[in-house]
Image (tube, rainbow, N blue to C red; front, side, top):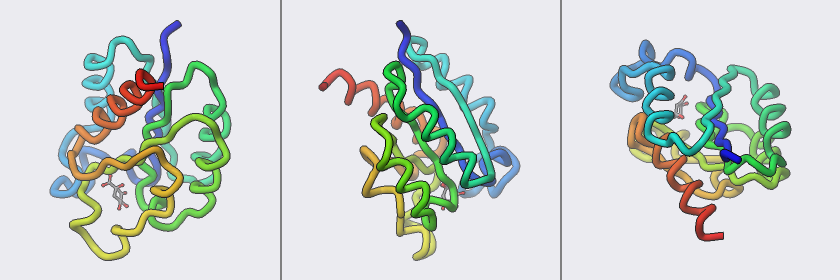
Length: 147
Ligand code: DQA
């Protein structure tokens, strides 16, 4: 059976392509997903975006115990820096979560250098634009082969 990966995007990432291209590039999420699906044909790549913290937590709960789920690639947007609730959800589930960011959050404002979710994620990828999502998925595939 094909394994699944959930790409989970938080607030304002529905505006990709229109939002601050110097930090986030000019690709839409639809184009990024097309690229990911052609690069990883062996994986079913699912996508969910919400601007609401609770909706993101609900999705982590509903997918976070699935046997066929290789992992969740999470760009929590600004909730990365603030949300103990999302960190608790990640810690509660069994599926590994990879934190990703399009921009290099460590090269930006001080507040963005702090991640509430990093300590409970399998790892973090930041600064490779749309490539951060691909690196996140590749990390989950490699991690699965090492098990
Ligand atoms: C982001 C970085 C966050 O600091 C910011 O709030 C975002 C996007 C990124 O992908 O670079 O919304 O997660």
